[in-house]
Image 1 (cartoon, rainbow, N blue to C red):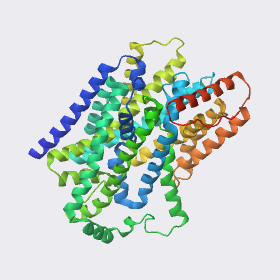
Image 2 (cartoon, helix red, strand yellow):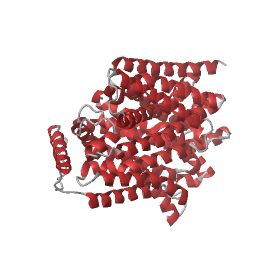
Image 3 (cartoon, helix red, strand yellow):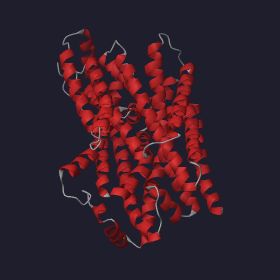
Length: 508
């Protein structure tokens, strides 16, 4: 009984800290841009840790260790692909997107940037982008709530539904009032908790087993193929396909609204370099810890005679059996942090899609100021309730739910972000066609050939279609194109002033 008290005390302190940060952010939120983008005033360390924490979710401390526990290092290719993708995202997209969104009519959402950048007077591009965000993020948020329910079910033998409701309720509260700033600053605390937990738990497990030698010998005996990057198989077509599919996860980074919106919120483009160094260090340490947790879990569970019913709870079980109840409670809080940080960030993006990209498009004279902030909060509440209803009866693993939503954003938005930033001939019709093909391609490919991760073919298809349609609809010398070229040049000037480098050469 006393052990449970220590654990609940740690969780209670964590929940209280999140609500306090949400309240303090509420005090600093004065207008709609503050609520949606923090007034473009995020320090680089906040942007870096916030992007990392909102990116990884329950996948980092539950999904990935569970996949490694079941299949071995062949699943680690996902981590390799994500590391490469995240680095390129910080290097190529972050500084230029920060500059371009400011130059292009101060765009504060991804859909509004597409519309402003491409001068889409039809408004179709903004509406479709907003709809894509709502569909895939509702699924994504639901996956986080599922992770919350599984967490409480496995950690406290409580009802799945009560655990899911508690995680959803607390996250909704601090996001509802704190907005973007609340989500970002809670992400910082949550990101630090996650990386510490992913160092402490596997190290404690190795010590308990008796060292690395005993760990390696146990894995060799129990699951020898788990230490092979090919799963113990020859590099056949099927194995190569699995590796390529795992590496393809990295492509998704270019189109994740809850991550790239952190780039838009930086204080200046030059701070993207500092943020990249901080963010990549955090990410590499966290991913190594997650992979190592899955491997050491194989040996530890066998030594302790523990029958792990759900592989995705391997970190939870190790923390509870290895650590003091209060410390274990903090580790469990770190797992919750991974889940809740992503939910909060995605709720804000969904709210911005509803308010900025759908409501303001339909309403000729939308309200401003406090009315818009209140509308944003109501949208956070509405999306959260819908996602919670979907999470009541989960029909997939956490990793499965996350991978589908990740593919949807990566294919629908990724090619357009890259083309918008680096190619002046992209047109609104090319962007519309590419976005539609990317989003639809994820659903179609998943149904037709699930053996290959749907992100890769959908991304390639969207990129090709966007380029072809743009070349067919491009009108050189038009007033619209002249404005686009001027903005492209102004963005390059802003980057140069910030010491980021020269803009890509304009294409006339």
